[in-house]
Length: 626
Image (cartoon, rainbow, N blue to C red):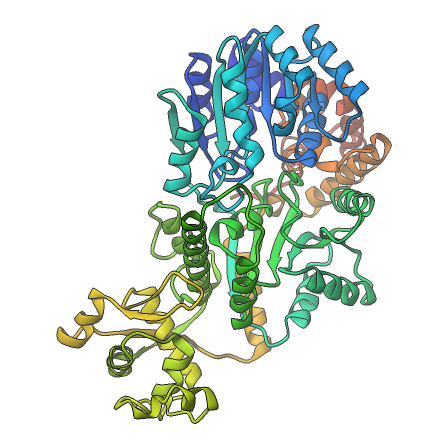
């Protein structure tokens, strides 16, 4: 069987997505590969198809139990024999799984990196033909990445101890240039084929909001999206519990997840979310890695995360089915202070010397500054993210909060000159707060202690509020007209570009959002959001939507019967395709995207029955013309 037949038979797709075929071809030719592809781009297909076509077993190194369970469940549903080996199994269950694997029962085995160094697994690996070793979430191997896991270093030792080196394939969704180099070097990839398909998630709408009361914003948002599934991330457990209590009291079907809950409660809450019993999840960043729930329609960050890597990975849990979804970050200046405190007191993974610790602290601070600038910029948010990951985007995407807003431009060059002059006069020894206070001519005890009133620039911007001065400073930081030191003090510095303002008349323009009444702003956001991000189901007419809901009801019933997440049965996209193509027999149902032979054998007749009953066997048009 060739790769395309395999794709159709097991996964129900008739064509590969961008980049998939290239990676598969190189693996089948025996070459190491590194695939950097956005969430939802189909990374798993890139190693699952070769795993089925290669002669031996494929080992997939995966960081989380929930990820393995989801992937194995989905593969078995598709008719592919797969298993996982991790701490959730007893030793006797692991022994049985390895015995079945050695006997040829499984083509794909997911394994936690910690298991690689056990004697039993090493013996199994040495006596079994391993054709490929796949490293999922490969950024975890980089000490400079946002999610370094020391256990991933065991992969390299494991490969070195094998009798024959298999093909190595590595995949991740988020990797800066430094992290990409780390993956190649640390894993020891041999002249790898490296494919970066891009970081853009076109179906995601990005926005930064600064509400006075975050809880009220969340409550209003959930009321507007009451039929949808979403994740709300908080920086601290305290915020998770507080928001959870508020939503629960308001009658929202909500659950929570953080490390302070016992393991049993965390597992139950996670299942309640995955199975749509509680469509709203409030969690710390301990939740989500490896969660393959495809119908998450929004991810809201109650607090600013510590880096853009973290943010993009967490926000990327929305819209994995390719349908439109919203990623909203609720920003306040206090978030920066909280994150700086958490970074200063974080437990370091691995053993480091003092110099390395200082380097890590500097990188943490730099990442924190970059996501703060993301929250403050008035430019396109998507462009900002793509540029951070080394990819050129467009100046305006028309699908983010900033591109949707109306701005008025103000020339603040005169104020910028006074700010640069003040920073120089203070000999670049102070941060934003002290400098802004000095320029505004404030009379606070701390400023008196620093004797800032002795500077000639003291009060030179007394006609402006401190918040306005800081707003201009932040714009100057984004444009590199000022810089801050990469440490917890974040002292203001001038740059080469500062001289362009002082000596060569470079203009500094500040964009401010045009204020509108609150109700008008809400209505505007809803209208613009719905205009720019059509969902697949939006093509269905009234009759089509009715059939779609009947198919969803059947899917939910089957999911409950089999104790399985609904999206593993069929995705919403597959149900919409059923409504568009209106299959009335087996051959037509197999032509629906996402319906493979095994899934047809398990569920096809039941879905055909609903379609036949609804249509009376007469094919009609359930969608709008484009």
